Image (tube, rainbow, N blue to C red; front, side, top):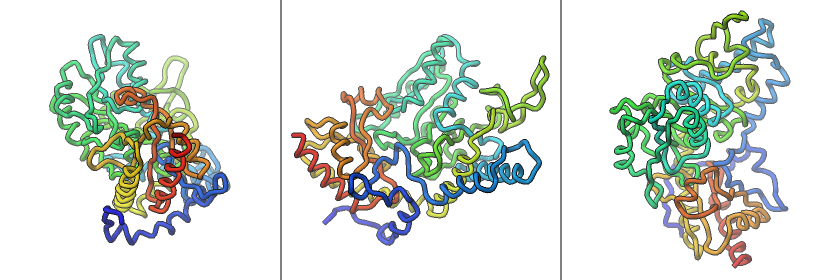
Length: 416
């Protein structure tokens, strides 16, 4: 019997009711029921999201913020409604601070090129952490190459936790920005963002938070967190791909020039001069992913209806059970054991390559990711080229974990 004790709320959670909302979860792979444990890569989409995208193209297809005809007005209303939903979802002070992007990568690039590039000088520093995704490393490298600034890295422990004393010591006057993830996509570590931003704020250093892996699992309150920038991506929170958001404080956004030019980011154009639009449109050039943004609004509705606390509790239960079962497998090594971590388990079985493991698991219908997870520096820290990763969502079950464990044992027996 499992040592993991389930709360009454989790035990009474009707997972089958919610699984019915996700068509992809009903399919089979190689003749076996799909066990989808790759949610940190991208999450499955509920019918409400799929129908919202479909409904836009069937009934409202028109460009936004341009036409005064009925379809244009309907499309604009649906599109802008998602901005209001995002504002409430992250508790932003104003909808004008919510900038639609194609995802976290574009959001961070926007800050890198529009905020950092004009400000950085030789000798300045960007402080990152050892656990960052490439999307929160590469844009800063590109900007540093053009400005003469450099990157510093805050270390982590063997359990995958930030060493806060050392991070604090690295917050010197040379640091012009601290950019870090809220939740590690490899380790599941949940960084204490409010505490860290307080440390940075005491030195006048702004903070950017990569919230890609946090938004689907944690309540986000940018005012309580005290950060200056917060970026999320839609497809990891059950929304369409190619959607996301950058939030930043109004004063900061007002001080930044546009990132790209064209479309509704302008007020008036002559061949001599352009007057740019007001927030948030100043940063939204061209025709956006209208259907995707409307679908993202439906995803937020879905999360809100289910309740982020319920999601967190169910995933914590699954994480505990999965970890307990994995630790019964001989040669198992789990990367990231921080207390309070999210439901992400990176692992290796001694003597087995992660890619071979994932390939054999797929023949049993079990989808996990293998590779470097866009976090090469973190792989280098642990001295491995790749790991396998099982990342769970609220719609997963203990029965699926049992199938996963059985498949892992079969794979181990085949490969060793």
